[in-house]
Image (cartoon, rainbow, N blue to C red; front, side, top):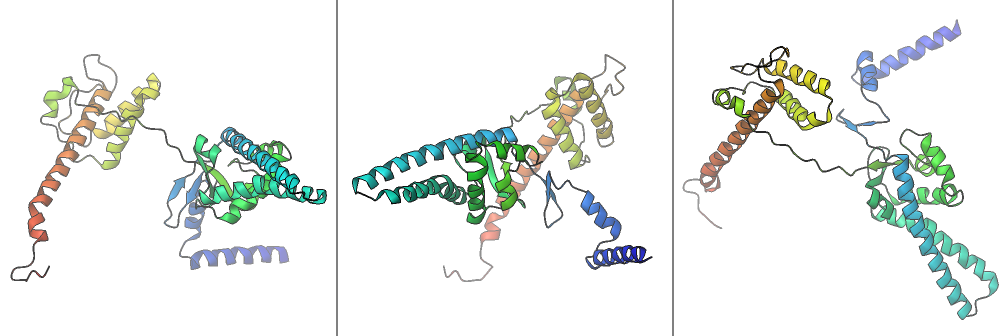
Length: 317
């Protein structure tokens, strides 16, 4: 009986907290389930941003570049310091202290300083295109970089990267132990250059385009058509035809007049839906470009009036 009462009171408390925050229980559950916390980041404005964690392979390659650089630099520093210590007659008891200080400086402190100064970058990450960020997507501070570098000495240097790889393989964001303790992860930020494909009105639809009206088409549908045309070459034949027919059927509600399009794929004499979509995208682009030109011309015409002083107002400038 007491267990049931405790469960009911806990549910009532959760409902009260949800209502006090301005959400109904159903909306709170929808908010929690609307995005994947491992692949998306929910901002304060309730906008889900897609995250791009670096893969384990990319992190391994970047780590090899970084730690080879740091180990070589540490070896040179150690050789210089021990040579200088021998030249000045430093007692042998201090050689161990100098060696430990050089290793700490080269393998722990130097990576932390570089990472904090470059806001998550390093030589290996510059080559691979990723950056260390906090779990909330913000820039890291020195404490994050120091924790990662200090733990990295044990999980990367002491185990030759074995511990870091095992932990990263078991984590959805490819985090190593240092990331788990510091609250960070490696985000891939390099975006491949996109070759914009500009379509003109096909020759078969030139006469139709002279009188066609596409002004009522929603912007969202226009963007989907443009995205399909950019990605059409990557689809298989059946998928490409299916998407083209589906978009053509949606666009037909907002285009007037409609040309003779083979939406049902039943007549070889009719035009293909993809040609129609290319013509619609070209007309929308021309319409938007014309609107921008008219807006700029109107602003240029009004600029003298907007910049002039009111009538009778003295110019003291």
